Every structure is written in C-alpha cells, then in structure tokens.
Amino acid sequence: MTGCASEHDYDADFHNCGSQLYDLFSKYNAEDVAVSLDVSDLWLPNISSQVKHQFALGVFAEMDIERFTPSKRLGAYDEFNEFIRAVHAILPSFPMLEDYIPEPDWGEVRVGCKEHF
Image (cartoon, rainbow, N blue to C red; front, side):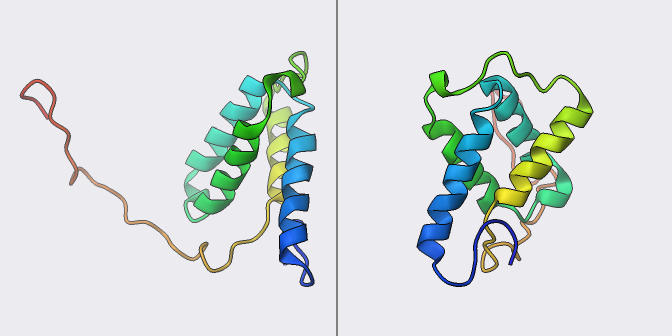
C-alpha cells in the first residue's frame, strides 16, 4: 500500500492523510501550494491520479488562509520537488479509480465563440 493508508482501518487512515496534508500545506505559502498542486495534476504521467489530486485540492480548499505561512515560498525547483514528493508520499491510494486513463481530446470538442471555433 502506498501513501498513509494501512490495511486495518481505511476511514481513520483517510482522515489521517487529510491531517498530514493539512500540516504540510500549512508550512507553505497558499499560492505556492495551489500552483504546485496544479502543476502536479497537469503533469502527463499523473493523468490517472485525478482522484488523488482532487483529494489534495479538497484539503487545500478547506483550509483557512490564516493557516498558511506566507513567508515560506517555493521559489526554486528543488523546493517544489521536495514539496510535491512529500505530498505524493502522503496521498492515499485509490486503486479502483487509478487504472482509468481518459482518452485525450485531439480537437474533437469545439466551443463556439462569436461565430468562430
């Protein structure tokens, strides 16, 4: 099993994962946490980790802005890398949902705007 989930009590472990993410996120600037989570979500190898990223984003969105540390910025790639590895180590596993890989949209979906596509 990966992340913070163990085999004995999934509900307790699920909440524990949220608490660990909360503690980690609170150590950093809120804007940097949001951008880092978005970058991780958009990275192509993470395409089947949508549920994990939604979980992390849900924890982030639930936090009060006062809980973050504005002065602790993720100003360099090494800092981002260390942060995102810590996030991934905490995230629970969702094996029933993580084997789905969405089909890419190669221009099949179009949105009209002022008579143009």
